Length: 344
Image 1 (cartoon, rainbow, N blue to C red):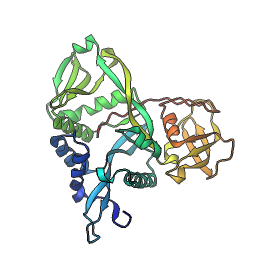
Image 2 (tube, rainbow, N blue to C red):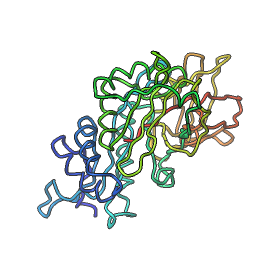
Image 3 (cartoon, helix red, strand yellow):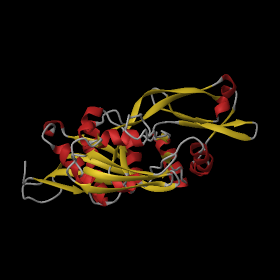
Image 4 (cartoon, one colour):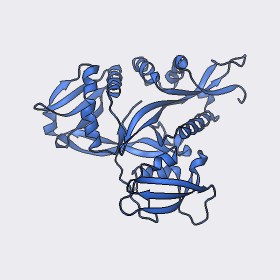
């Protein structure tokens, strides 16, 4: 295989060539949805492919494996980052289990690290595929439903893109009051969401208590309608319980990530060992300075002395994003308020 393959990002005019592989590997997606995806999402994403060169050794051979980097503006404790949501990870059946995806993910993580991206995230078809690359669950999808009072709210269907765009301000406020990490609902985000819902025959309602907006709800699906989202004030919401782990994430640039990790209480500096098989800059012995305003971490060396409290990059991601509590020598606990319900 070596010498016959090229690992590269597709040019903008080439992105449509990857659709054939998407259709082959994700048969559940309709042509209508893919028309939306390749028109809208591919306008600003990056598609990394492993391509079998043509018989003359030139480009534009057969795409045998791909991973797509879809950018989202993520709000995190007052800062805004452009982070990648990794989607469309696919390999032609006859090329699976030959290291294609490893090449893609290793290149992608190296690029994201160089771009100083704090973390990246994805929705796995199978978590076992991504765990060896340091990904770990950080978000469980809650199961919300309306109370009887909520069911009586007046409904007003959204009738177009302009109306959808105007609802973003309300939704950003709703999210910021509840979560410390979420995708910003900019006008462009909301317009694209409207088009995504339209592509799957969706129905998106605004909910009102009198003249006051109280929430929004959406169902989609051509043959079987299912809820896409429900955002509503607590007075009309039945308590939601996590139903299943949904989103995995991975620290990519450790130094940038740590800027957002603050400590309640007195400042302290500790030594910590971090294990990262993919990104050398994240692996080794570190000095971690924590304050109530954020953290700074600096690498001391690549060797971790015996007896140093050490953690894998995946477990560190889960712990610092508040998904789980990890016993540690310093009694540090993190507040997990993350909301990432994006689909593509």
